[in-house]
Image 1: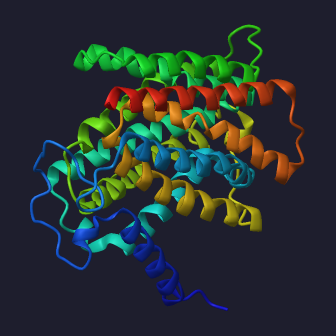
Image 2: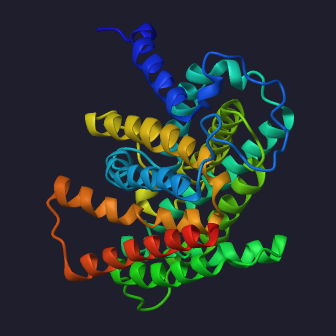
Length: 352
């Protein structure tokens, strides 16, 4: 049967209605959006007259991190039949297309400032993804994931250098606990530094800057229209990163850095499933949740919540690949959950 875009209309309309109902202010349903999206108000609102609390924002980020955990499994399927740069380009191109179909009326009204900031965020996100993916070709999974988690250390350092923003005590305690838990959970063996470790180290400030500037750019932007605009232009900002990487490093134009980086595209069933999952759920949905929520929390708090990602990735591996749970995984996972709870309780008590 030939592909007909009209067949996608009903599920996409359902997805759009669900997102609007869940995230849009209840008082604004059925009403036109306010013209100005640049107005900064003293206290940001969520669902009409209700304020989104810190724990609510973190809960949405936790949910997005859980989806991202499963994306490791489906990403493995996609990367088995495609080079990393090309897969990233295809993934975010499909995500941007779906986002535009869902939210075109908001995206067409994007102010130049929102567009430029979204593109900057997208290039940061694309750089982080690419460095993380490339590091996996030169080192083991545990070490690559540990370096990604070390973005936790980069955020407070860069936040202080750039904005003189001092980390809150509850976030500091949660940060220390989650790093201990992450080390135990991943059990990385550091026997000398390799190329993958260097690439992983470079990704730390990239991810840290993305988390910081996502808060800087989106805080004070009211209305879901601004969120949809930042979502779309972030996804578009990833595209040149993936495309240039494919052309320069993976197409044969230059000698390959690693044999696994030069692959022909194979449209297998697993590749298609991996691409769709990573484009729709792990890109459109998760970036939307992250973009709409982080303005109500802090970059370090959000990154602590993202450490639930390796836990869900492990759960997925147990059920899909029949991998066994080891003692260090259980203990490390419990410590990571404890860190999230400690940081959340700190928010609760500091709010009183």
